[in-house]
Image (cartoon, rainbow, N blue to C red; front, side, top):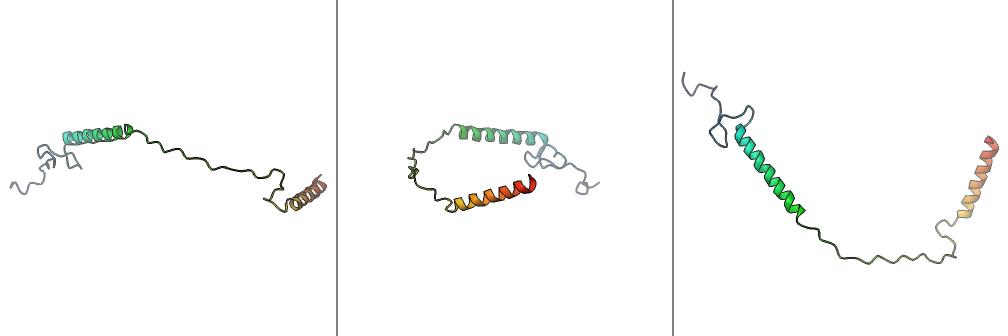
Length: 100
């Protein structure tokens, strides 16, 4: 058989060009293993560099002063508070009469 027609020859690793490839892979087992070891070592080194970088502290900032206002002054959040409370009391009274 002519060597160019023989399609069953195993393809060689594209990294070392020596060993046959793993099925569905470009590299052989030893090249894949070595590559994974190098990748993991680089990842560990990067994580160690981040961990040893130290934390920079921001300068302290003065908190804004909060004033409560005059405690004797009426609340201005709900100017119709008394009207709302009267309506609520009326509704409650009606409910109690109907279900009570």
